Length: 448
Ligand code: NAP
Image (cartoon, rainbow, N blue to C red; front, side):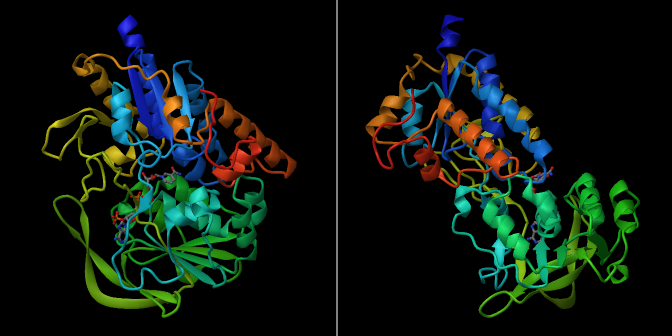
């Protein structure tokens, strides 16, 4: 038991996967330091979940409980790979878990993708959620129609935010400048394109039902509608055809079996060209096959919502074809067919790819922690990770601990209450540090 108490672990990333791992680790006797690049913990719960889904955002409270455990410490605003390297963490801790998620966005590899007005859902989601990564983002919502490529839950979130009644958004924690821009939006129609049919749609039926029930919004369907009866295809088939939608109010169109071929425009986006697909049964999945029939659709904004993408972290092997870290039950491998890297583990989206809900990360992190526990006899002399704050202070890293974060959290809630909404987030680390009365550059911070 004495030895288990000294088992020291660094977790990189304070999102759901990192915090589920921290929880499972302390339950098994480890002492855990959680490093987070941003000034705030909770990853996609804070900056991914849509602001009008406050019930899901409340899972933050369960994650806060994990951070409050006596053997968990938070080091926020520490950029691993910049302020401290993964190698330095491996020297100081018995084991290190990488749980950095998939912060990038997949690309379609079609002409015009980089035109102004062609954006990733990741940028758009960061923007409406007030992520510091979106400080410079500007979206032009002055056209009548927006297009979203992809039909996953993120695509539904983006569509809902574009059409939802602004008063309903105003009470959430949506970023004020996003709300301001949405208030001026001229978008009346949002078209979502899926390259396959309703039975292959990646969104959950609950999400599309919510979209179809929004006040002042009608949802219609275009393109192929599956004959194979499933709950999803029956729901979709029950929606009006696009041509039958009422003329007034906002509209969302689910257009199936269309692949994006080019984003149109010279200086900025004016539309998108798609090709109609047939679906062909193949061994693994229904495959979309182009019919040679192309259509140009007018649009002033094209949001590609075709999935998040993992990014490499220096000092951690990376498999570019899957944009994830090669692993065997959470043990990081040198290559996908290589040996394990001693003491290095992985959890969450960067381990298994960007799929699943918040809760899916729990089983994923527990699998990793079980491997870590099984490997404890290979750890060698246990290391003293009692004072990582010294290294950070020596380097002038302005890190924040749990006490700091709780003060920021309380202030955000208070600011929200004063302006009639759930929460008003600090825009970035500088604003958060200024609130805490910390020096703007260098020198010590944190209480550890
Ligand atoms: P996703 O579920 O993987 O959906 C991606 C969509 O993009 C699919 O429709 C896919 O179609 C399409 N796609 C991929 N590559 C394409 C291409 N080159 N051209 C055209 N279409 C393409 O991704 P996501 O929506 O980003 O969601 C990520 C994860 O977060 C999911 O597990 C999701 O459930 C979860 N999430 C949940 C919620 C919620 O519960 N409310 C909210 C947000 C996110 P194909 O199937 O044809 O490849």
